[in-house]
Image 1 (cartoon, rainbow, N blue to C red):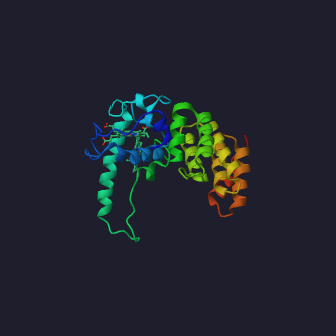
Image 2 (image 1 turned 120 degrees about the vertical axis):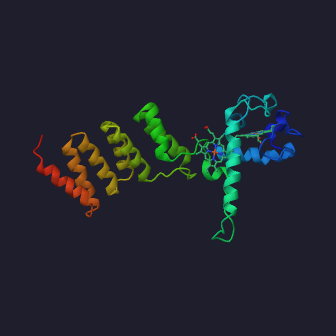
Image 3 (image 1 turned 90 degrees about the vertical axis):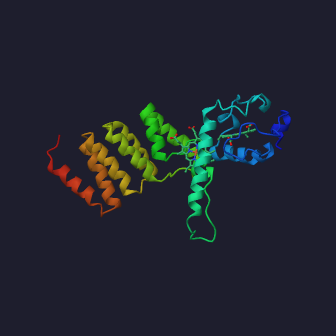
Length: 236
Ligand code: HEC
Ligand code: HEC
């Protein structure tokens, strides 16, 4: 048993009272690796799913209670995993061993496993572009080495187009500018930035960035076409 549990005099119950998915006859000691696995997989503490206050001794928690909605969410996840693994048993694995699915296969240290573009999109819809970009930096600091998110140019580019579709050209320019600063050697990110400037009516900047994209990738026909169009249109 870990020191924090000993320190506060709490121990795993001999007989759990409210198991609905895990085997009812399990003694509490068998829950220990499972519950610890949950906290690690989701990057949370016991209080995320249980009724109890963070920082208070575990002896004050009511682990059998179902009051915390995340507990039933976790139960549904357990059932889902059971059914996924049943399906997996039906296929002949191409490797030497069957690949199992775990909580951390999806969660990877996060309570809500989203793609980076979904995560940024949600922040943008709730709180705007500034918050979304701050969130991006925070996620990068926290998760870059854990591989929970794809930090290549792609997610930011997709997110930028979501912002652009909402006709928020100023916001999209900020997103694409960050991407261009982060991946200055990618023809694609400069092309996206040029497109946002084009939509904003700033043909001068659009031209500059289409040229930049074309220089990095002379085969970018779209940039070439757009540059041609800019030159045909009389200057504003
Ligand atoms: C991701 C959610 C989640 C986290 C985090 C979590 N648990 Fe649980 N816990 C559950 C679920 C779900 C059950 C009930 C399982 C079932 O119904 O089969 C449960 C059951 C229990 C029980 C049995 C209670 C009873 O009497 O029926 C104990 C004890 C327990 N957890 C302790 C802990 C401890 C200690 C931690 C932190 C180290 C923890 N749990 C973290 C979801 C979680
Ligand atoms: C196939 C991928 C996948 C697996 C495997 C998986 N989850 Fe999830 N889980 C999700 C997704 C996606 C969500 C977010 C659902 C939403 O909010 O729309 C989620 C949400 C949750 C939530 C709610 C979190 C919140 O803040 O809303 C809990 C708790 C949870 N999962 C626990 C678990 C546990 C425990 C396991 C392992 C038994 C597990 N999950 C396995 C995909 C998965």
